[in-house]
Image 1 (cartoon, rainbow, N blue to C red):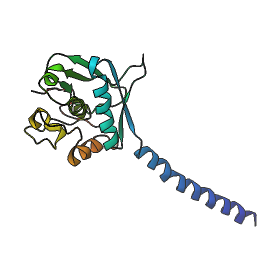
Image 2 (spheres, rainbow, N blue to C red; image 1 turned 60 degrees about the horizontal axis):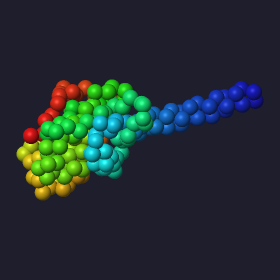
Image 3 (spheres, helix red, strand yellow; image 1 turned 30 degrees about the horizontal axis):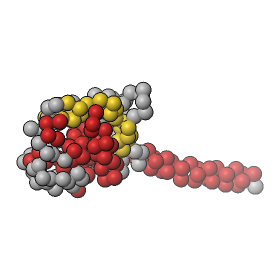
Length: 183
């Protein structure tokens, strides 16, 4: 009787361990990567950058872009300048630093959509290269979409590429850190 009771308890415990293990690994694989940005140098483009981050947060599920708390080191730095927009190519991960977006006023002065610029440059941070020439429907077509292009959203292929970049941990990207200039 004692053996049956001990054996029964052991079987129940093993069953519980077996059930718990897959749940734990499922939680790990669905973890959301959170990248933070510092917009303290973004000048008049703070709202456009926030809108560009929200575009990505709306379209992808395994990475989020959030504003860093004051005084906290950010993964991405946004700087307004007078040239053309540019960014370092990712994908970047939390704690790496080095993600830079230069939000260029020249494109804004020429009439390009401010949120499209922010969404496009953040797309580079998430690991997407330029897709030029390209149609307006491709966010990563950048300036080749034309001054009248107001599409701020990534297309299905761009979304899938970002999801792949942030699925299953850090990846090695051969051109990561390259500065992509938008002209």
